[in-house]
Image 1 (tube, rainbow, N blue to C red):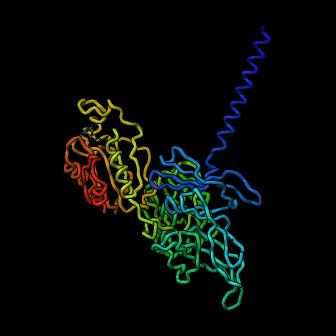
Image 2 (image 1 turned 120 degrees about the vertical axis):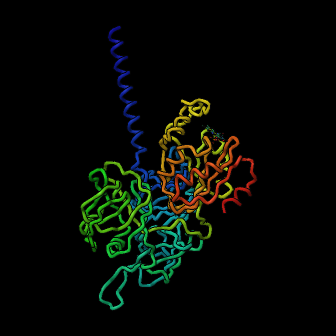
Image 3 (image 1 turned 135 degrees about the vertical axis):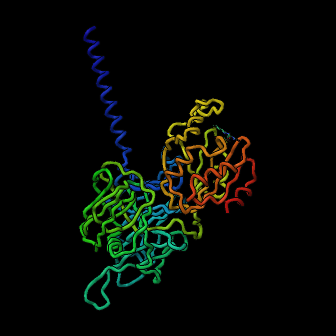
Length: 472
Ligand SMILES: Cc1cc2nc3c(=O)[nH]c(=O)nc-3n(C[C@H](O)[C@H](O)[C@H](O)COP(=O)(O)O)c2cc1C
């Protein structure tokens, strides 16, 4: 009897250990290491994920899509996409994406096939055809992912060719443009390196930001290093830094104050990104600034910096999108926000409180309910996330229910956390019966620097045209 008990307990322990090992190894499979690239479009997240290794220094990748700001993902690629071990990825909007499968490409009948393109958000991929039939050139290097500039879809490449004075070889930048959403590319001799806009894309731990650059010699020498990836170390709880291999032209000045998002050069080769604001006695050369940088945490970060690809530019099939951001406690505003987003083909962003409102919280007949206290004492609840890609939008639609004739305090928190300066803001509310007037005045008073274009009260029973005509 005793022996049996020992055997059974031993078996249970072994089963438990095996279970634990299985669970841990399963967890390992879904670590972020497998995520090679990720980008947000409102609440939609698209990411490239490593699935398996493939023969000849290659790997298999798929696209995963989330409709709920990254909470849940589904795999959407049909079949397999095979790229090199050091590929480059980009989604320029929810449909159009690229996977540069190999940077250096050999010629095949006057064409190069180094890049995949998807026009259906990552479901299917086709090989892009780059036409460059130069008899003196065998290898074409794709230097960066494609980007939009003034409606033109541009692919930056380089060739290694004999110098004009025959004194040796040099790398020369050449640019290709595509008029069919990236399927075929032809050289555009009119684009010069100097035309490239003074912005860069900075991807930090998978989140992509746009940095505006200063106009100085340091920036010019910095641009020569791009695209680059840096493993930046943590310092003092406010900055990430790396010592570059190359020295840059520098002109340090005593900046006195650091703003969160500043990108600076310390000395002539230390690149620094600040994620806190503070006063300083040190001197730096300014490189640029990221507007909506998040807290970067206390460990080192992987930072990818590439020349800018412009998602704002209106071109064929590419519209500057409207972001419909909404707060809704009981669903009325959400219902209208979804209709508005559909009609204007906008992206949705939910202003979601960390602690959801219960029915009790919303009881406006009770002085001690959460909503009554928040509104009376101006208590602003925490919000789950900030908009990560504000640069994509010129027009923001802001929607919420009227609470006590004004905006719920969570809206003030939202406007404090997300810098909408310079954006066209269209406000709409739902309410029991109140008009928007006092609420709109309250917003204008609380945020005098913001550009509120128009305010409306909707019920959800409006015709589509009414929403469309309102946001022009
Ligand atoms: C705390 C609280 C205060 C409210 N104050 C007003 C008000 O001042 N005027 C009004 O017409 N409706 C008021 N309402 C009603 C809401 O504005 C209305 O039900 C709205 O459509 C709810 O939107 P939601 O479902 O998106 O949360 C209030 C509701 C709550 C919960």
